[in-house]
Length: 584
Image 1 (cartoon, rainbow, N blue to C red):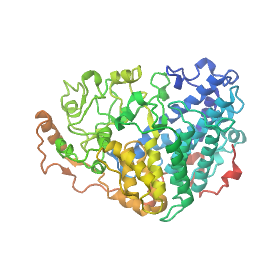
Image 2 (cartoon, rainbow, N blue to C red):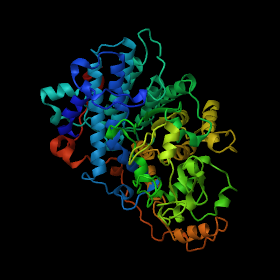
Image 3 (cartoon, helix red, strand yellow):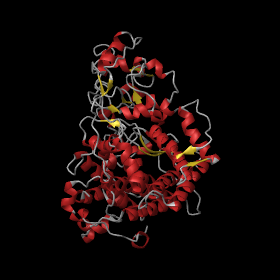
Image 4 (cartoon, rainbow, N blue to C red):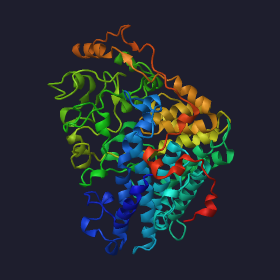
């Protein structure tokens, strides 16, 4: 826990620090409002005080979010990253930033929540804002529990700062942490209803009742495996099913028709995004922006000189999961079953994108790589990715694409592209997996239809299945949510009740590189993308690296400096009766 910083985070939250945004949803208090006496005095100010939670405290989590979620899971190749070979230690800067960010979120949520209790505002706005605080707090704890395992519970940081107990916090048993998350989301759902018990209508892009409920369904699905051996807790599975089904039936939300559209700027607040980081490049607040394009895009992809992700890319194993390989003739990909999520997730030879570089007639992957002085104008000049693919999700394109999508320009390491953390399709698959439970498969009519809706959107030829197995859902989650920061946490929850299965899959993945792809791709470019001459020279590398994955790998170490401030983090966790000890 970044204890030494919590005090300043808490004070900033009270005073509503931030800069004014050009987007009403993300408006923040102006700098001349930096005092407690004249803020949180009306509905507008209370909403502004909560808007901060949708981006800035999460800023330092972005890189860890992707490296843990996708590199560790085997979905993404990232060179010599310790997340690729499971050698992360407590001094890793991304891990340090990740921890700091999550504890900052919790401190902000606690402080703003407490301030709202006595704020001058209408009761419905008070309830909505308090519910949003608790939802974000639960999300932060959900990431902490799935990343670090047992962690301390900080219920009221202002009180604990006052009584001097911050650095004495003990870790709480994992099952108790999950119970605390459940309790927090239950209170959020209660507050998302008005005083008469009616669910309040949500605003696009903001967390609402069904966003909190969908997250609670995911928490219960995860919680169902804690402390189990082979079989998951039926009561938790049933609760996950019940909650997910309510979102599906009563939220009024539907899957978007075109999968790729979910990740476009104009759909930042689409109804399929139940919870997301809503970044704001125009606010002037440094920590309010999305920076992922810089880490994931190839050099020259935008005009700001801030892209360095070309040497990494979606893994060979993920490509195989989509049924493709980097040495496959692009024309042959069109002869097999087409999963539209593949192209929306990874760029490969032959791919063109109408939504990137719209002012140049679209983006051509191969031409960009090799026509460095003409079409690319600053592109890499050679294939850098040793997997033969590069990232698509989390990219907005160039400044013109950003302007066309949102009416404002991007800047260096700064975009307003939303990062979706919980999507409706995820809730659909949670429902199906919860119905399957410990049975291995299901013929339940509704579960089959819900599964079909997710897969049919991406694979038009897919017919309603006679049954759906756990393996079907496991693979579908990977394809549907690939490169969205989620896959590692599927392995974590699997490890709770069947660590051998999780370990076996991880060590048998193709996580390494393909040899001699630049020769193949360059020849394809020089032929005008008409001739594909793959040979035996292009192959998955000999003697690939295999990570040393153990049961302990599913819990990352605490940052070393956190342990220095609180040595209790190295002690065994304690049991806490959450419902007795804490209340909202």
